[in-house]
Image (tube, rainbow, N blue to C red; front, side):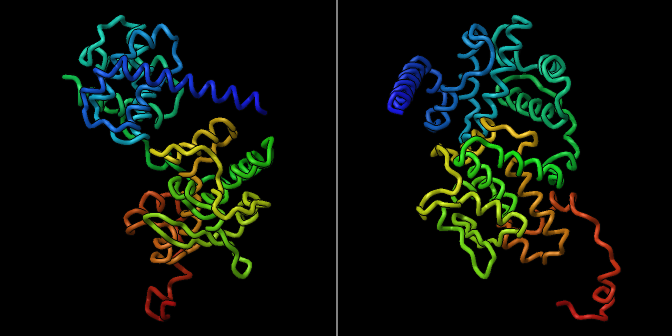
Length: 341
């Protein structure tokens, strides 16, 4: 155990030394945006794509300069940009030998050749996202224009999980190799699938925020949208497994290293390191939870209160997945023969 800890410390020191040396090497590029936040610069300078080292060495300065000039301010947006732009630039340089200028790299021809060559069988939504990101760079930094792919049909994005998919996720959670991992998986499923929490809310939940009243499980959500959410009955056992045997009320329910600039990154890391046949993303689990409540006829004002949504318009993207209700049970109300409850 001591040897493993020593290796961890050595590796951490090595990575920190590399970060500082690379920061000094590319300081002239950071100066292109004097107000660039430290956490954004950290993502830019630490990022290394899965391409041959020789390719990355050839295009890295160009990619870093572009990222700085895009003036990102959020972890997730700069991370997405680095993921897409670095691989694209390496491909352009390798395939075309083009001079590394924004006008020559971010062209419509290059973008669509890249999608055809590298992503011919990927989903419509994935290809659309790449094209959109590269088009934004062309629009901001170059005198070029990249036509957008048609946006994927809304019904293909964030669909609720099926019963079979949910069953597969529970099997995945139960199959992980340690209690710690099984409890983390159960925390994601229980808090997102059973209480509809967003990623930002989920990573902030501590043991003290979960309690049982009259046999029902509740989650008290802190933060900018505070609320108290009853956990749906089919998910209560899952969430209880996540906290079983744990006594420290201040401990986070989901245990993982949190980046100060973007705490939900811990969830993404866990799901990537412990893949499931059906990736249990928090957004789709939340969608499933909301659609279930809509299908069950939960009153609008109650639904908004427990979801943390601000207005009814926010429900549009969920309503498209809900069942069309039958009118017969409501004829009395619609004709005024009955009083609304």
